[in-house]
Image (cartoon, rainbow, N blue to C red; front, top):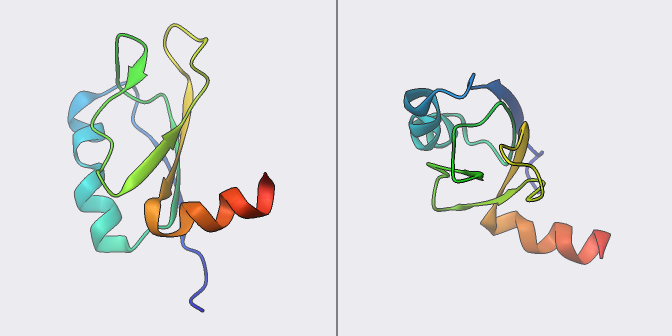
Length: 82
């Protein structure tokens, strides 16, 4: 089993930086990405790469952080922590 690759990124609520996530995660083979200040639309983080699940506090008007987990490994985490 390969080691988990984690990264942290502060997008400063920037749409362009958030839109660049798909390229960044693909090039760096990131499994878990911690995003500070994600770009949001109607209180929901946008531009999430399609092969990731996004977790954030939905009660916040504009979430301050978001956790992205690659779908391929997300199921394993759900089993471990449920």
